Each structure stands twice: as C-alpha cells, then as structure tokens.
Length: 227
Image (cartoon, rainbow, N blue to C red; front, side):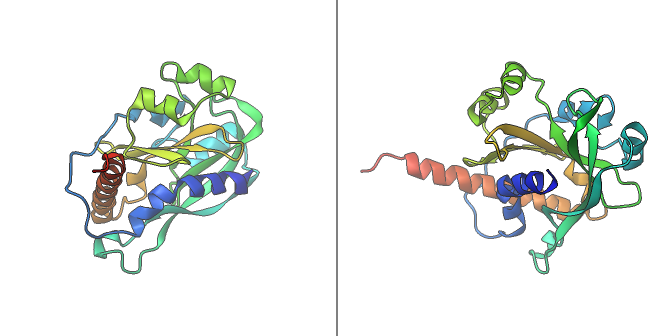
C-alpha cells in the first residue's frame, strides 16, 4: 500500500516535479487560474491539513503500521535558479483511519506530515464533497472530466492527472488515477514545506504559473487550424 500510493503520487506528480526542473523562457504570462481550496483542507473533523499533528493522529488512531521520510516532488533552492536543487522531505505514516469519516478502520490510509519536530499534517487524500462528485466517487465512476466540470480548467494537466492551485492560500490539489485507474485527489498545504524559505515558495508558484502558460500555448497551437 505504501509503495503503490507513493508511486501514484509520483506518477501524476510529474506535473509538480517540473517546477524543480524548468526555469527558462515561457509564453507570455496570463493571470493564472486559482480556485479556493480551503474547504478541502478539512479532510474530516479529526484530520485538518495545516493543523492536525502526527501526535494528534497517534492519540486518535494508535501507532502507524509504517512511518518514515518521503521525498516529495517539491524542491528546495529554486530561488537560486535551481542550482543544487533537492527534494523536500515529508514524514509519512500509515494509519488505520477512514479519511472519509474520520473513524478507525482496518483499511490503512497514508498521511503526510512536515519533517520537523511539530510534524504537522501537510497532505492527505481528500474525499470529494462538491456536487455530483460525491456520488460518482462512491460508485467508483469518477473521471478527470467530471472533476473539470466542477472545479474548472486546471492549472496543468495530462492523461494521468490534474493540478489545481489556490495561490492565495498556498494549496494544491492533485487529482490523479491510482493503480486501479480510479480517480483520487491529494491536497497539500505546500507553504508548510517552505516555512523557512519564502523565496523558494514564491519561486515555486512563479514557475508553476509559467509552466501553465506554456501548456496552454502548446494546446492552443495544436488546436489552431492548419493553413
């Protein structure tokens, strides 16, 4: 479960990884789309991204069956042009909790925390609560196009996943296909990862906006009628 979930995040996370790898000429910048994702931070009353700690989760659900550091697609040293850029680590734990209800469960869930003494919940799978997405997710029929109909066009996307950014609150929702080709979403309060380096936070968002512009320009060129 640990390896499969990490692999799914990394596969769809090719969108995020690019932020640490590219910093060059881009298309003319347009206002980047931004959707309010603050409600999605409350996974359930017991799990709130940005507030709940590793200690809180242990108290509520017991010791994790597995825990350890995980290298995220987010990277450091972006403000220096990407020189010596390294992945930022999170602390991940597998707990017996149903993220949809907050109740103890036999089925494990993987939660991600900041890799510091506080170990604050920084990322988690989020169960959709908006409109018709609820029913379709429960039935296992949810598609990436369904998500687009509710959240609008993503900042970036491909056949494996979609990225929605809330730049005002420094949140990203990665909607991806898991190993069973079912659509899942991971919410991350990424400013917690850049708490000690606001210049890298600003650079990350700048590059994401530029890459979004590039992607839109490429799609527009592909859709342009041939002369």
